[in-house]
Length: 114
Image (cartoon, rainbow, N blue to C red; front, side, top):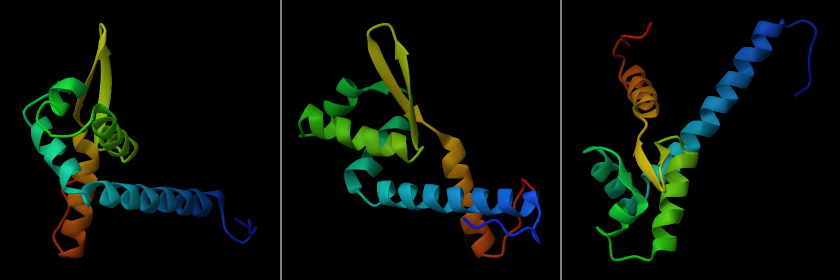
């Protein structure tokens, strides 16, 4: 990004934040575009699960489930927490809240966060 001295630091920070948000939305929508990943998110509505518990609900290899979990994690839709020898995956609702607020803004609805 070329820095133009006519614009202040705040302008460039806002631009960087917007670019990061756009990239985040792209990753999020890519992750949501897959039916298996949407099914995993639906499972996690009930609470944290291990990869093995998630994998037991699908007719897929562990490597495939691991890939789906990785995509969801990169998109910020799930977080992981190591507890003992297991890693538990759970929904990250803050990303879903951001998407909901963005969609509400498109619809012309007021956001409660303003």
